[in-house]
Amino acid sequence: MKNYWDKAISFEEYLQIANQRLENPPTPQDAEYKMYYELGIQRIDRTLKKFVIDEEQINELKSKNFNGKILIISEAWCGDASATVPALAKFFEGHNEVKIFLRDSDKSLINQFLTNGTESIPKVIILDEDFNVKNSWGPRPKFGHELLLKFKADPEAYPRESFYNDLQVYYSRNRGKDAIQEILELL
Image: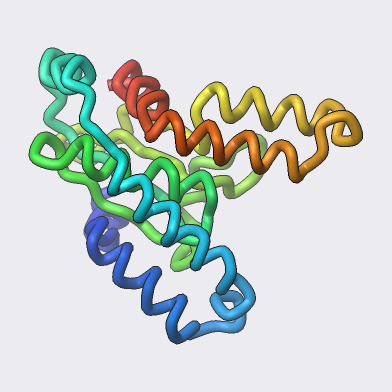
């Protein structure tokens, strides 16, 4: 895991790359995803503006005496990632180092952490001080997963547009709190 950690980037670099890809897409896929980059950056900015650290969660983090690192597999165009990654980066800031590994730069990492056979992101890998995998989480909090299951169970009664809307409203209101809590429970 240390090799992946060494290739990973800071949250600030992640934002810079996202903005660069939006302004000047380097690949055909990035050009095709331009609308998603734009949405992702807007959501990241909204999360950063509205995110407030929960003191109870910080106290829980401190009580865990976790000295490891947080490695997040992500891409800025992803809706789930744009709601979760900035909250995690801000929450762990000053406590545990957080780095982001761009999923599409090297699929060998995400292929070790598939979700039901898919490369779903974000994927949070909790590492100990020696870069051993302690646990993993993702791609979305339990409530988001329940919405996805509701959509998959009956797309006619709960269409994709309703699912996406409900998920984004949840993310906007929750501001990363559930994701942080679920990750704290894995430390």
